[in-house]
Length: 121
Image (cartoon, rainbow, N blue to C red; front, side, top):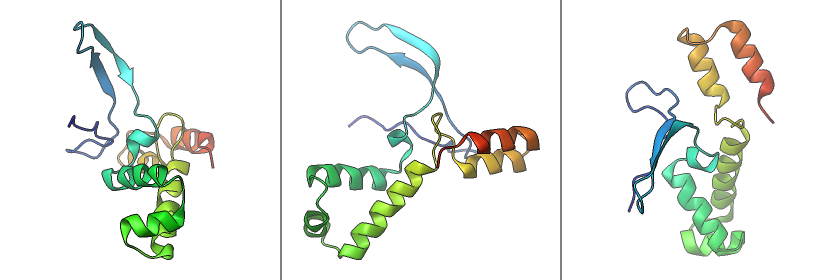
């Protein structure tokens, strides 16, 4: 199974960008800065939950059976995924990342305010 693209740097926790893509058929290489998709920024556990949810056709009752957990547990996990996705802007930055960058001096207060104002939700 291919490795998942990490959402955060394993060393410092900063945001990561994919910088190179390679075709397995013809070896063409594409270079640039590519942000992960919103779903690509979810944890493995959250992605597994989403896969199961889709395969269960969105039925919470079916999720209860497949995961062998209660309705409130399914709802809590779904709410967690919804919250994670709603915190992400189009570029995949969360409020937490913006605050961390501000705290560590990678953003000025004005830049942080601008980014926070641009977040959806």
